[in-house]
Image (tube, rainbow, N blue to C red; front, side, top):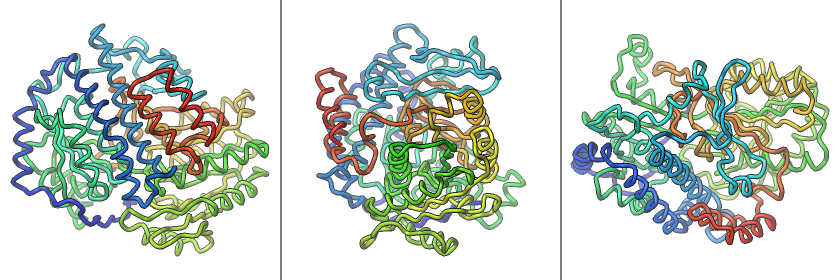
Length: 577
């Protein structure tokens, strides 16, 4: 089922004139081969410059984002902008690690934790933690990259850094990045992927929703802009159409909706099905994409203590409320057990907590209409919170029938603060997880990201642990996070980010291709983040962390330049939140 049709945001920056677009593309063509021929030493130097310029512009970036989203730029709410700065810096520093290894040995680095092989033969790269610093800042959090079937321990290194071993296009290529309007780190990291992973120069079209960040990004990327290797442009659908159909654009990457993707490749909705059936593309070009998801979190039944309950209620709430729920990995469907004795308590406390969580400005176009459509479709839904003008309550819809494969909550990405819950049978992990996995794979729309909450008592039990590992094997998602917010799978750059492999242009789903992936693997299947059941202190992405506005700027400066002298300030702000 296609996504909602998104209204175009009103412009805040004048659209780039057509003649200027053509000049910028021509300039990129003139300089694309020079980028391919740029050696590792210079590429590393440019990354160092990007780090410096990103830190210099960090406060400007975070404040601009807070102001645009109706947040207090001097309070804890500014953390969302700083989180995007931090994620961008993580991408830069991880890429620097890879390039240093290529420079020193001629080969991409092995993962920090080495490799293992699962029972079915799939190779797993243990990429997180990358360093002792990670162990201190992300205690207990690990990351794994699972390779596609057929990759072996002997061949996995040969799937890395292919563009550095032998450029696929020695003459160079021009990539068009159609930027996302929600998370500001997306166009930044997509540009990094185009340049350093795909060996392309890049034109970044800012999304009208967050195009106010374009001048800031232009300043950060100025060393690339000045040499014709990057350019930032503005405008809506007409600018996008001109560029996607430009005969000197070699590749397109889109973060957006499947409806937008299909309009680009297959043309207007009228007659689209016939064109798909005939393979009659209106645009025949290489395209990669990340196109959203109805994100589930599977709550595996177990006995929770009062402390467990309190933490996980706030944990789950953060999965919905982060960035006003304008995230492709925002929690949209809770999959619980009908036989879990604490289900009702959990849902009651979740609604109560959301009622106390501040509501957010509905800054993304059409959010009010989408929210209303869900409220009308599910009159039993409970609105939580007291929204002010221009804000939306958090809408919680429980007990959606899991056998209703056409349910709106399962087939439409709400792209606003709506959460549905459905209950499946099974009192234990072994009884519950097979049905939950089948439901997620076969009923919910999308294959981008999902989560699981797994109490330690489950993994300590052999049958429970086996059920969890089987679920990880069988879930068809590009990213799976255990016990924490699914956005960790996005924010850790050594993990690939993108849909589970298998989509086609005719049936695009959550998209084709991967970004981030700083170790430059070319045959990945999924990324797995495993987190501890609890957390020492309050995770800094929880919306009620009272020191977030102090913590995130310190994390940004630390990521740019690791120093033990910076740790006391980080830990102080973290633990006092």
